[in-house]
Image (cartoon, rainbow, N blue to C red; front, side, top):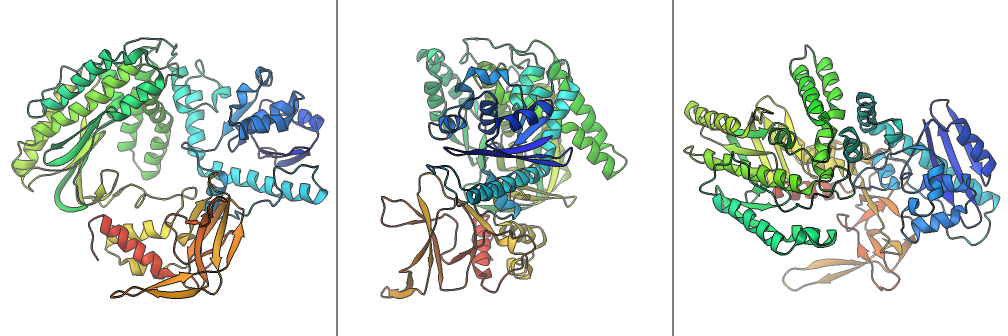
Length: 624
């Protein structure tokens, strides 16, 4: 396995390769012969990079083919075109590439910031119009090596994704090979299912499953039927993909279900209380186990482009492993079986997206519509039947489950259990069971349907949404705020205690990145002029006559208690004033060096973090 990165200028190019298997580094500067020798000696290895799928592999192939790397660079970076479109000759240079860039994309510098690494950038401009000096080449090699080393760190933090993809290849050697390791989950899934691209021409001929028993909310099903007729009358099937996507996005039905605002559409079901809420009592998470995969098999909605029954095999394999996990003799054994499920879980979940992607061989938009629409209606059906329970209260609905509250009595629980059992029997088929799991919740804090935290009866915690999710080394923005919120919700620890007792500077970091819409960054940094404005309410306004200009893309920002530190501003050459980066303090300092192990300085304004934590708790319905 070789990690690599290319840097390209008008008159020079260079690359750093780190062979982690053989523990060797190769630095190649303007030498196609050296590159060819390295490639020939390792052509069967996996070449790993960050965004190498879209950039570095084409630079490397171009150099090996004798093409101008600067022309390829500008084709991709300046003209924003796909690398494979530059030349069909690239197909003559086989490479097994694996890209560690996440999806949706996050820049390497941002991920380096999350890791706490040094995020300073090379001062050598990429548009330099002359050959580089020896000093400039040395500096570029230094930063190129740094990026390769950081790519290795990112890979290690996300190794489970690689292992899952590799697990799929090992499980289906007759359908996929190691050369597919760089493909998306959806592409590999299509290959495993033996999909052959077909034009079904019936995208809007979706139908309703016979298991539905809607009465009170039948009008929602009728709305989907109306939309089906509308799409057919517009002949949307034969319109452009852009027209179809525009139509899909414009279709939504907003209505009250069990007293809760809901939105129905062609993506999924969403419903939650209008205001932030906090509940305790007899709460239950009514979760449909493997909802979409189970429905696809039960009602024969697996893509019609598939030529085998591997989807069912994957489903059964994952189900067997999950059973072993549940009945494991130890935590270590349970963890092992959980890890073994990952390749199969990713395949099962990837198919639904693949069926709506017109570039994927698994493309079958009618069956995808049937899955999404009936999935919503079946959950709506469940809500309608649960509403007969005296004292029933719906807290939220989402794509694959509900959170409900019922009276804390045996009678209420038995009614809920019976209704769920009847729904399971009605929605399942001889091909596959569609089953519900009832998880008892002790307490829930809910901002909205996409942001909530609950504590289960067994003490485990479920965290959904940016404000409370469990962060990782490669997703590590304002970690002290997430910790403060979770500590308060779970243990009632005051946010002041969590924030004041933490002494690791990395926990307070906010990573920001300058987009291509702006030209540079300015940091207000000098002795400010303090103005007082207002009549009844006097406000102090800080004006900074001096700023420090930066051209870096990424910044690690901290709240400052020094008046000499002002805002961090995004600047455009055509505008006289800058714009403050979102979610950054009015007074901040920058620390772009490696922050790991660095302790909190006296200039850190802990009060800003305490105020932010309390503000976010209020958004969850908690006033402290």
